[in-house]
Image (cartoon, rainbow, N blue to C red; front, side, top):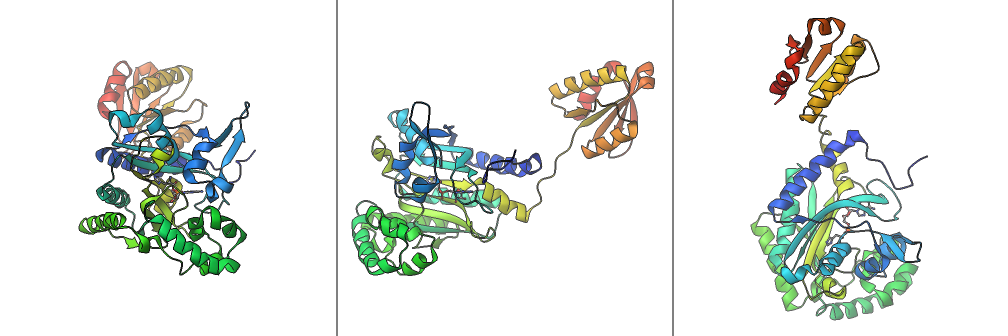
Length: 417
Ligand code: HAM
């Protein structure tokens, strides 16, 4: 049996880096006032179709959707934003305090063509802020991402930002875009032609080479912003500049999900080939209302956890296994029983302890202790049992001491605490 294409195991030898990233991220999010939220992996299909947009790649061809036994259409979440918005509305969180900050980490599912940095089950670290319209939050989220990547020792990343406007300025942009696309119709792929009426903004995100060339000089949202959106974007940019966060204004950045308004951004790396975005986010001021909640501005981002770890693996060693406190070598039945009881007691006291029950030789067990990178080895055989004293060997200094079996546990706890 093998994993499904695009799905993979993250093996223990790779986990240290995942844990490090998660710890650094959670510490930072909590310092910035974010609270963890946990949401289901399965939701009604309608939630994603309405939020992400019917005419997006994700909804049209990438979702894992199936009918459950009652015939309800369900989808494995392709992202977290829609579910967090649903949760915000479902639990009427806005009623007690409309301003909320959430983060979550977990698996997402998209049936894309698998390649390096692109999986069908992948992980995101997601953060969302509800109830704040001010551009300070936009800059704060980009600042936060920048700080996270700095703490993880990552360099060579660049933040690309754009403003996608709002329902007030969209129509004039859309009109200009449609006029432009009308002239390029013969160069667009079938998918884009189909989307012209449904969702022309999506054409700007087409990855096809011919479309890409055809839309090179297409109108950009940035040139059609209303005054409010312009001022909002200016505040975001000047704040980031003041805070010393580098960014590139990228008029062509449109993001692959429909819910975005105003500021949108992606953090790109040059070290993962085609899959260059390690994080993406933006405002979605209309989504809470669209899904049945009160008119509430909102903004957030998601980091591609798998990609982030891959970038880190290129620049740093996987943090080495910190090793075991104690390896117990028990020779003979009586010693084995004692060793078993001690190991449980020590584990329970928070001291990492291993013992091997296979009755191997002292030499083989010393080798095994080394494999575990054990700081100490406790040796107990028939002689030691008879003398009521076990031998404790410091694997660093090679010093050996004899420890009275009756006071062994408190003695060891003293050493390790
Ligand atoms: P997204 O750009 O679709 O945005 O995904 C965010 C990040 O997830 C990407 O930049 C990428 O690093 C990672 N990612 C996406 N698809 C894959 C894949 N197949 N394999 C590996 N990594 C992948 C969102 O999902 C939005 N919900 C972000 C957001 C939150 N916007 C507002 N709030």
